[in-house]
Image 1: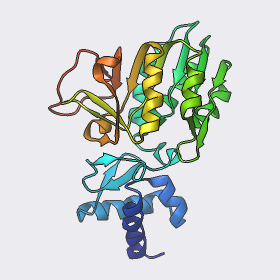
Image 2: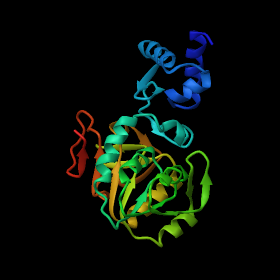
Image 3: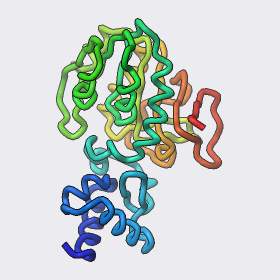
Amino acid sequence: MLAKERQIYILSRLKSQPMISISDLCKEMNVSKSTVQRDLKLLEDQGKVDRERGGVVQVGLEETISDLTEGPVLEKVNVHQEEKKQVAEIAAKEIKDGDLIFLDSGTTPMQMIPFLHNKKIKIVTNSYFVLNRLNQLDVEVYMLGGRYSKKHEICYGPSTIEQMREFRFDKSFIGANGADTDFGEVYTSELEIGSIKKAVIKRSKHAYLLVDDSKFSLTALSTFGRFEDFEKIITNKMPEGGKKYKNIVTAE
């Protein structure tokens, strides 16, 4: 595939899915990481894309994310990966032996797993994406069932929420598609996913929101919470000029 063909392919992919990881582009075009990075640099210089750590997004993606524009969970794993690890490491320090915790389906809560070794805890999740990675831990795990989303690799719906009512979480660690410091609101891409997150917060003694700083420029379809709903909002850094909140904790 010639350079021009690759660049046309990348722009075409972004029309159907506004955020793509570099690793996925490498596989789809059968080229090296350095080749994709050169193509993205050229497209960015031309003002056609915005590069993010580990991926590429549509120009001006400060739009509302919905189920029509959000990419599959696997495609978001490598985007802002280092920032997510910083957030996850801080979050894991909140967990004490004996805790019953809920791990949300996002790629940031998933990054907590390597920091949970030697923790004597029990974990509840509705995410097969998270569940598959919990095998590396010697912990008791409860998987919530319900309607299955192949795209997000989660179970959701009324039966999931009903099962959740059997638990009282000491701590929950929740991801989001976006967060607005002006309105103090937190967003996710689908109403039914928002309902799950609301139920988790309600069943938690202490709820923690985990977001990297890129999420502060995004909104999404469903508002599932407000900043004051969380004991701590953990992020790698605050955006320039963002409104300050006492419960925001940064890695800086």
